[in-house]
Amino acid sequence: MPRSFIRAASLVIMLSFCAIPAFSEIIDATGLFAEEVRWLADNVAKETRDEFLFRTSGINAYADSKPPEVGDVEVFNTLNIRSKTNVKIRAQLKKIGKHCYVYLQEGKKVDATAITRIVSEFDGRIYPRTRSMFGSEWNPGIDGDPRITLLLLDIQDNYNPQQGRRGYTAGYFYAGDCYNRKKKAESNEREMLYLDIYPSVPGSTEFMSVVAHEFQHMIHWNNDPKEFTWVNESLSQLSQFLCGYGHPPQVQAFIRNPHNNLAAWSDDDMIANYGHVYLWAYYISTRIASTDERRRAFVRRMVAQTSQGFSGLNAAIEKQGIKNDVRNLFRSFCLANYLNDDRVERGAYGYDNPLAKLALRPDLRLDKPPFEVKGRVKCWSARAIQINSASFRGREVSVLFAGQKVTAGNYSNSFDVALVTYSSDRKHLPVINWLDINSEYKAAHRIKVSSVHDRMLMLVVNRGPAVMKVEQAFARGSAPAAFTFAIRLPSSSTTTAPRVASSGSSRRTTARPDRARSRSMIEEIARSPGLEESAGSVLSSRGTAEEPLAAVEFDFGFQKIADTEDTIIDAIREDIAENDYKLVEEFVRAYASASDLEKSRLHTLRSRVLDILKFEQLQGSPRAEAFISQF
Image 1 (cartoon, rainbow, N blue to C red):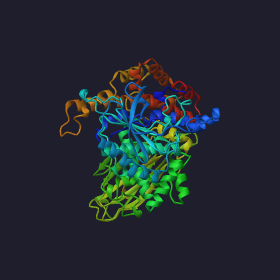
Image 2: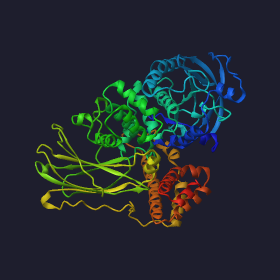
Image 3: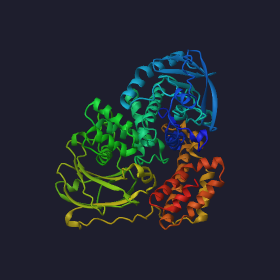
Image 4: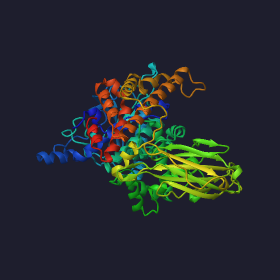
């Protein structure tokens, strides 16, 4: 195997976001293990223990094995999150359900009533609902037993309330358990979920939502083990809702930070990622089909697709016989997040009742001329500007737009731009005007503003290529695209579209750091306490009416690290545009000489540098490919 158990585990770590403030995002490690899941799928056969033994020795040693009984004690391989080591624990079988076994770690106590509720909820709600919507897990699986093992244990992570660290890992699914021990030494050779009992509350709504989340991961692995993380997580989030545990609270994080890249699954704001992909899954599952039966059929087709990401979605749409595609769905989804009005276009720009009041705040509000804006928008994301258009009522206006074309190989981004006119009191139907963007990424339109509309919303959507082989590299590696637009009265201006900055432009206004300064900045990040180390001191006080000084200092400290990383990333992009890789080389050297603790603090920056290199590799750069091999 190319990596140790800790790095190799196809681990889907999930936080109990229901009870933890936004800073706990630093515990999430999903993106670290997706690569290993794909490696296992490509290199290790999925076969039962009996099949493996028969193939390798011609015998079936498990045919007469004793079925599990309450009171049995088993030894399990588990992952210590804190020390990043494989730990064997003993656990006793406490209860056998119709579809599950519940084991409890020896020396730990969980009330019998809670264990009964776990079995009841899993058998009667989670198991049938999740399978109905997403498909089947591997059944009877590697052990020939159709029941799922639910291992209740105290997952050893960095939770320490005495020191203020309240973030914790609530559960995970490890795909390595579904492979033979001869191929994967740490395998428990059974389909199982690992569920935390401290500080998690076994049997609680939050606890059961974690079970639903992880069970979808198990099902998805069986159907498409190489699925992109953002798709897999979106459907696990949806599973929580469909099992009756409500909308995941990470939606609030997305509302606070709506500029995430849907497909990149980056470290920038992990909890917002969860909220973002959940809303996407909820939106397409409720808008793509008209009945529950058709929705179930569509989602099952998504899970079963052997193509990943947007390619899998387009394939599922085609098989469903629906006249729709990723482009239309994504731009409609983005507009629904800001407008949320289901009275037009058969509800395409709104949510149903549970989310009828959701609305993202526009990035900017313009109350008086000039109505001109320059900005940047991430790939697979959107920006919105609200305009007080009371002075335009009943008049015709010129709408001018220009966007930046970002190219990698034969692929490039695309813009969708909408000008929405509406009334601030919502008494009148909005009018949505999608601009025709030409091959030069420009548009010039004249639009009549209704006399009853006193507001405008300019929505700028940036899409990457929806092609499986380049989707991830483009989404993660491409810089935010620049754009500019203007809204004017025709008599006061030309109808020529404004110019936009070139693809090599940077967000920075300061001088590009040289090699020595970059090394100093990298070392500064390595010395700075990581989010996981710093967040604990303020987690307990978040959400109070008045934040303490520690919370404010944490916010500023985090922002300083983020700004420093952005400066380094911008400088690397500019250097590479000039075919200069000296700053990449400097980072590689700094990372190689860093301690394990310092490497953990450099993880986010390392991921971003690697994404840039993969983007350049996509364009045929041998130097980028050479540096990738050093990571």
